Structure formats: C-alpha cells, structure tokens
Image (cartoon, one colour):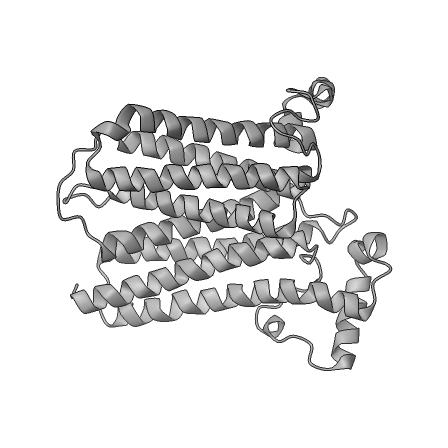
Length: 344
C-alpha cells in the first residue's frame, strides 16, 4: 500500500478508536446517572431522532412510565426529570450509530479503491463484526432491566463493557502496526509472553470492575485495604456456604473483594516485571513498560480513591478512562517488542 493510503487508514482507525473510547466514557456516565433505561424502545433508524415537541416528549415519557424503573424507583419523576436522564442514553445510542457509519463507509471506500490487503480486510471485517456484536450486547443488556427488576444484569453489563475494551484494543493495535512499522529488530522473545499474561490479568480486572459497577458494589465497604475492618468479610463466608462459588461473582462483597485484590495483583505483577526485566530492556521497551507501569499505578490509585469517596461520578469516569489508557499503554509496550518481520 502507498504511504498516503496508509496514513488515511491510520487516521480512520484512530478516529474510530477515539469514538469507541468516547462511547465507553459516555456509557459510564449513563450508568452512573441512572440513565440507561430511559429509552425503552430500540429503533435503529427512527431512534436516531429525539423528541422535538412537548407532545412527543410527553408520549416518550408515558412509554417510560409503563416499565418497572419508573414504577418502582422513579415514580416521583416529572417530565423535566425524565429529560435529564433521557439525554445521556440518547447521546450514548446516537454515538453508537455514528461509530457504525464511521467504520462502514470508509471501509467500503478503501475496499473499492483496492487500498486494503487481503489480510487487512480479514482483520477489519472482524472489527466490524465485533462492533455490530457490541451494539447487540447493548440492546441485550438494556432488555434485562426492562422486566420486573429495574436493574440491568451485571453479567450482560460485563459482556458489553469487555467487548468495547477489546474493540478499542484491537483498533489501536492495528493502527499502530500500520502507521508505525518496526524498523529495527529487538530481541524480546522472553518479554512478549509476560506482557500477554499481564493483559489477561488486566482484562480479568476489567471484568470484575464491570461486576462491581453492575451490582453497585463500590458503594459498600468504602475502606482500604480492609473491607470495613475485615480482610475477608464474614458475609462472604456465609454466602459461600449458601450459594457456593457463585458468591464470588454474584454478591456485592464477593465481586468487590476479588476486584480490589486483582488490582493489587496486576500492580504487583507489573512491579515484579519491572524489577526483574527493566534494567535489561532496550530504551524503547523501557519507555513502553514505564508508560504501562505508570498507567497501572494511576489506575490503581483512581480505583482506591473512587472507593474511599463512595463513587463520585468524576472519579468513577476517570477510573473507567484510566482502564482505556492502560490498554493503550499496553499496546504501545507490546509494539516495542515486535520484530521487523513480525505482524503479530
């Protein structure tokens, strides 16, 4: 491919990654403001147009009144209250539509202009399919909260969030490989598997972070490192005896316990990698690992302060953004280990 077309493809991918990151952040705000169930209909085309008249707003509000969130939690809401939660969910869904257009239209343009190799087409098709699946998971998640219990399933929330983070990581990784090809060979065979293992821990931590968010577990046990003075709360022992291993993924205390100790594990693992391998790394890899360890540290601190201050919106959103930046730092650190002949 020509350099100019490479540059255009990279700009396209970076734009897409930025929009996905924005989608994640706005999704977090939507959840934190309890706005996610305000749009009870899922219309791909007509849903892109918000109510424009007072009559249309009232009709939309009446539809919302038919569902459990209003009947059980927000029966005191006025039309003005409803509008305040509607707009966050509307922006979230509208951005999802924009992302679809931003990916699909340039993809067919580059494809028809023969600017894409067969290997690249395969990777882009996978990204497009994952993006479509992400949209489906959003609908699937919201649907779980439009029943008797006006709260979305934390399992579906986790699937929705993990897919978004995976999508962001794949897009950034592909953009970096195309836009900044490796020119010098770096011996890093021992280092790459360690980074992959660390990535697995990071994604596991994100998964339990989603469980914490879905169960609103961050509002409980606002102390660190103990949980209200207990290293392992007694309530966990009780729930394990009642429901078994499910207590670790289905209860407030269980998911928060694992999330906080996974965070410590991720940070400690990165620290040990730094102590053992940092002195022997080439300069570029030192920079990459330094950025990654720095972001993991910042992210851990954001998590602790979000917990201590009972999940204020600003800190919670920064914590979610920190996870994206941690993955971005991981992609760069991994990129510094690639051989000139490698496309992995």
